[in-house]
Image (cartoon, rainbow, N blue to C red; front, side, top):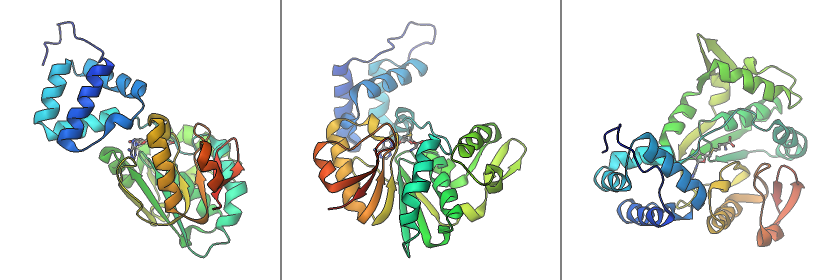
Length: 278
Ligand SMILES: C[S@@+](CC[C@H](N)C(=O)[O-])C[C@H]1O[C@@H](n2cnc3c(N)ncnc32)[C@H](O)[C@@H]1O
């Protein structure tokens, strides 16, 4: 490791990145090569810069220290999230998807790439308000164990809750967000009534398979980090994980590509909400 006063190489070249990917694949059987190159290069460069590591240091650490690899995964993934992030999306769910959900006896929802849980708790609130929470089970999955631990706790900074409350209001909410958490000092603790039907667990979209059959899958702001090939693979995984006429919700940043369109009907073009039809 370098002395912090020494100038450090702050970036990694694509060749170095590719050889790092090979090393990780070889030792940990974890394939980073299907992550979008530019974004991965930026994140790894940032780690090297913050931790004052040369590419040699990084390779040595990854080779000899499995615990470092765990923290490396946590640093490489982007975990930014919010409750009711992009309120227009949740308005569309409420108006266009909820009536279908209300017609089902039992509902399973999968939030893939759920980060620290805010997105799934937002869905849970919509389902409470749609009076179908009790017949729904929610699964939140991610590859990052740190954010999953936060999601399970369901305790968020009270300052963030102010932003989340504004998002919630923009969904034409009938209540206030504070109905769903208990505030103590600077923290907001999500109420048990919201958490009781939710399970958070690890699942890697790049390598793990189907684990249940769902009426609704939401995966927003995740596919953007994957290359085209992995995006297609994950869309197939979602297709195989959906019940007939189930809903796939990708949000405003990601859409279905070419052939996948034949298997889905567009419910909301702007928010990329689709229904499985074939
Ligand atoms: C930017 S966050 C999106 C969170 C939330 N869906 C939202 O839109 O606010 C992306 C999440 O995808 C997760 N992720 C990245 N690669 C993944 C993979 N291969 N399998 C599962 N989750 C992954 C990251 O750990 C991160 O928590």
